[in-house]
Length: 176
Image 1 (cartoon, rainbow, N blue to C red):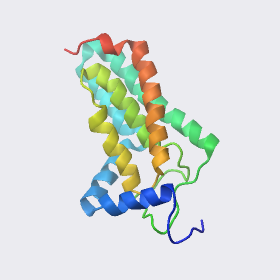
Image 2 (image 1 turned 120 degrees about the horizontal axis):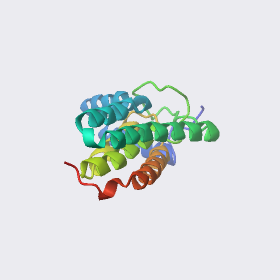
Image 3 (image 1 turned 135 degrees about the vertical axis):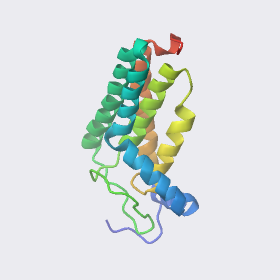
């Protein structure tokens, strides 16, 4: 893509985020989050651990883990309809490989938010503030998403996670 030397709009925000926080340690951490969240595998694995440990609610943990994968699948479906290309500008450094050239919405943001919402209901702790912002920031640090991609992904994940959490009635259960 041929762009002007000075990024504009979301590209300017993305380049600004990278300039401000994309230090070597941050990029390394972002890559770790990227690999953990790829295809929602890390979040799915955590759900399986929850199912193994919490035998009384094994079915709920398995349903939540499948819900995380379902949220990821929903993001892939939206990507294929929207077909927004990933950021491409000389001011934006890409710090990790991606499985596709499609950007909207961020599947990492979607599955992470769904996992945070669902697993919060199972653990009795609000995991959203601890899990979601770092994953969203990591996608910008790595230069693979526009800010609106991660926000849309988080909204999609919150919707899928929230609907499934209500269906499972996880809010009313107390962890052991």
